[in-house]
Length: 544
Figure 1 (cartoon, rainbow, N blue to C red):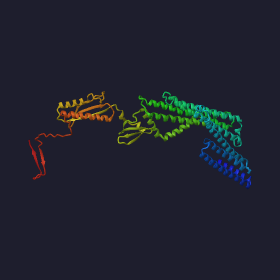
Figure 2 (figure 1 turned 90 degrees about the vertical axis):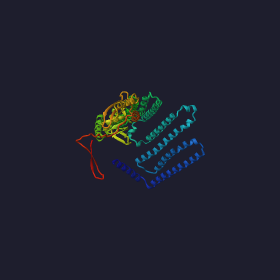
Figure 3 (figure 1 turned 120 degrees about the vertical axis):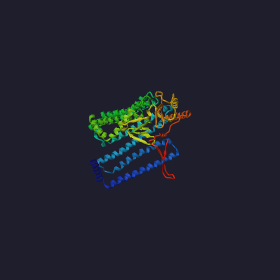
């Protein structure tokens, strides 16, 4: 707020000095020159554009039109500076306002100078066209483009140097304590570092592109790719350090440049470490793709997020140390307090995150597995960092927090090596013993040497029990695969064979029945009560 008040007071003082130092006719004349000049400038601008449009329609000197039209913005800026100079001539201005107006004029001239250099650079395309064919082929498009970009930067430097040199009053005095050749040396240093950095970046990018199809050199390709941007920041840090050492700067400016060098150096280290994590991710991906590992891509994603988070956290601490100069212990203490507050506020999230770590490491199930979790049957669709998503056989999607998944009993149905069937075959009580033995033999023959059964667990068929309404034959066998529907199909085949064989042998299957036996006892005579007859209710005794 105080800064805004100071600026307002400064503007008011300039306005008061301008009004007090000039008569009304001087102000009117100056404004008239300013308005007339800019009206004339606008007229000339539109007139030149119309004439250029006519030339384009005729198609005369078509290749020169863009370069001729590029002259118009340069002339417009120069003419605007001239108008300001002429308009200020009748006025008596305060020294500060004179300095600002001169700075504005020179800024327009510097912009015109920069655009003129840009125009000359664009005309190099015409020079390339008149070159011999052999020379033109040797000059690659990319190299020619880099040359034009470098010359444009030189144009910007020339325009900036011209403006700074002609307007010394706008800049602090310490800027002129160094000799002009010091600034020239800095420009040369920046130009050499820039050109060298571009060439080195092109070299690294070319090598990286050449290794894209080479699997054996993938690590080297990733390292080279990770080094491109850190090297650029390193070269910038070297250039800033050279400027600090060459120029004679006040203590405050020198301290700012020293801090900037430290920050750039820290940024080089952090950025290089962050990009090197691509190598770790590539190696883990190759490991996960092997057949003899127990991890999947979720593990790679988790490691990638955790490692990048750690590098970012410590990178920020390192950058703060470089920017503030405070000891690392102080920053770590502050981070510890902040981390404790975050941990207390997000403890449920952290519990789920650690739960996901346990699931990734212990691997009780994987994506696509059929699991039974607290009475829920379904297939695992996703193992996230917060929850595991299971699609039950009704089609519903269940999201269970990983904290809970890591602490409950999970039955992985998909990982069973076989599927056991426990079946009771019941036959009637009036089946003779030899028929019962034959029934057991039939089932054993059906299951004997079946390729679909687990050879390490031979089938069990025994006459094991007398049920209430049947004789029970226990049948147990182990289907050697864990495909549920294939086991169902195999059970169907077995059922049909047992049914056909029993029918051929005359063995009857039992069904729930009740047989009542009446025993003769003189002490307990049996009577039948009849009701609803013509003579009313009556009891009829039954005798032997």
